[in-house]
Length: 404
Image 1 (cartoon, rainbow, N blue to C red):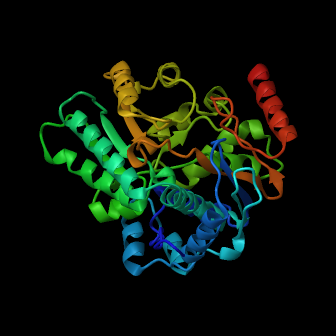
Image 2: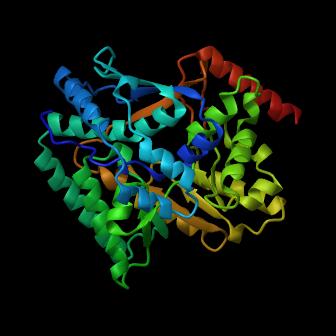
């Protein structure tokens, strides 16, 4: 490797990977998935040197194991169970699960295949590695960090002086961060906002479990789209238009009333609401927005709670789609006093420089030998290798929406 190891701990992933991982371990240990990398930036190209560095960084990541101190930290999270912690004690990434080549339009092809238990855990570290290798090898990294620090200081000052009010928010930027150094600096500075009485916004934590442990802030994260896609579509006997019901049911079996923030847009929010009826709407503490117009979505959720006879003020809307503090401020002011509002702010906090951030993803493309897909509230956010399957899924959703 030309660079020092980018991922130095297996805790360096988003908390929802452990939340989903525990439920996968207990309920779907035999499921197998394929994950595929995609760079959405049409003007970005990874050189052969970058690809080789990424390969060696991933190889180094695969040599890591959990320490007893790290496992003790996971064990203290209220909803984590000893059986899963014992599994993690034995678990390690498998480099053999990875295929990494330069055979792609952007110059970088990455795909992982294996058990869902394994491949789910690779997504976040892989994206963090790709990001950091690209920015360190493509640009003058020191100049990028200076730009990052200036913008971070400006954000913190504007929060302190009340120019923006972001309510309760967390840092969600691991997958697209400039570097480990940059994300750590962001979490460190944000954690000091609460040291002063002059900041009305409340920073509560980060999705990065390693940094949450290091800085004593809350680790944040429940479920991702993979959960709905694989639970709902991985069993080939299921009607995929009911993916949300299967996913919510399995989540409640694992966690009861704990760890309850439901993701609404895996197969459109309107279809989600068909299954998010009184029992689930009562058990889950809130819902997460990740596509579509946030104001329209929030109004739809408030109306749904009211129709069910649930006081919206007892529930939380968590917004996490391409946020900056200006957007968060507007969203908060719109819903303030009507429902609890929280924000998960990602790339804007972990990779804001004078150079545009990468728009890279790594998504589940197959489960148990069959295509899976997401149809979100924003066209183009899905990723599936088989257009025929997407058409099939859309037909299933359309039939349900028009016949129920």
